[in-house]
Image (cartoon, rainbow, N blue to C red):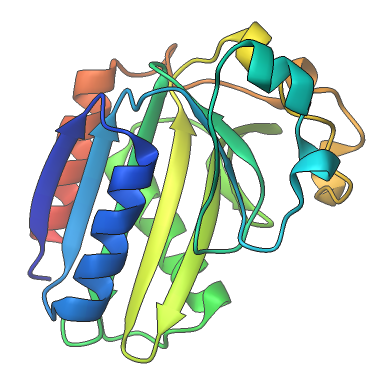
Length: 206
């Protein structure tokens, strides 16, 4: 698999999303984009309504911007403890069927091979360790190219996470658990630097 790597740090997610869309539409190469510690922001899926998923007044008080991305999926909050990983793939480099479930399965296998994390798995559309969510995913498919992006929780700030409402739709494995009981972190298993190094290494030899 031929892939170009772009490393970002403390980059606004809006700028990252603009870059992803430009690369998706205007280029034919495949890319891995890693944004270490993006600036704080709340990012909603393309069809979500802010009043249903966000404590808007609290977010406004904390001056956390609200951004709607071009892909579907759920609402996430990003900050210095998040690692954003995006694959922009072309069929010439990844000969699989470009359907959501197939792409999710490919991504699960990729991360299982890249990360030495026990009990890492894909549950519904989330990456989990055991029954704790550590990564949220979203996709955008355009003919023979796709974007698959993930917000990984290396750690998280409880006050930031409380800016998100309990989602109106949830995966069955969440079982109505509040954020603090539902979410896990990568921090006990890998440093940020080790996580990024392993993902890049795997992508360039997969």
